[in-house]
Image (cartoon, rainbow, N blue to C red; front, side, top):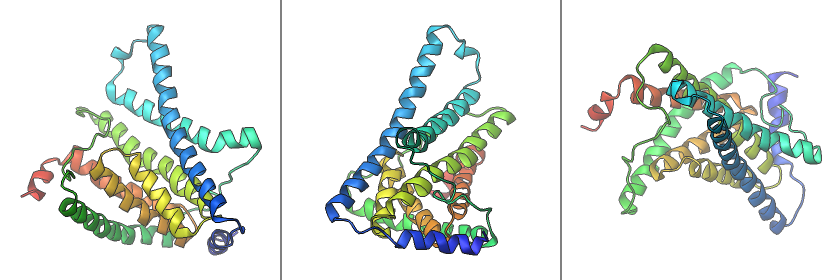
Length: 264
């Protein structure tokens, strides 16, 4: 199948929805959003429990480099989350999720590559606008709340490489597969696309914790969802997510003084 026909098929599937009552649509929407959220939370519980059990049998975690351990934990959480979100429904009800369902049934095209930087500009504008509104109309909102990436101070080259792989490669691919691939792909089959994008983006913002980060990632999710919808593939949103995280990585770990420069 050519990239063009794949894209056309993806959009047509999203727009032809089964007829169902608004009540059933609401129930399915809530159920899917809750399923992804619970799976994400459960994966963290499972990994923490595994680490606790390993500690009980005296695995020497103190001898493991914290950056190596953080990378392994993050990768394991994403693997378990994907296993729960996509694998468990197939095991229980034989509801298989294919590569086409999550938008990974073809290689990236030049359209995907070129739309990612365009999406980055739109994301910057949307995020800045939402931050401005939150800062001016929500007295309790703290736009400068620090972001916890899970990584502490990086001292050696391999630590920078591992942190980069985790934040700029693993996280974008896994999160796009879960949120814009699975969740958005499922939701838009039975609710309007705008509602599927809104629900996906609200959940994506919520799982990132702090309010300032939640608003920023909400804006990012809206743009990445639109890229998924308009390209018929997940690649443009993955590339945008990687680019955004790459910029954040540079600011946080490579040149943190730029924050003071931008802040005046």
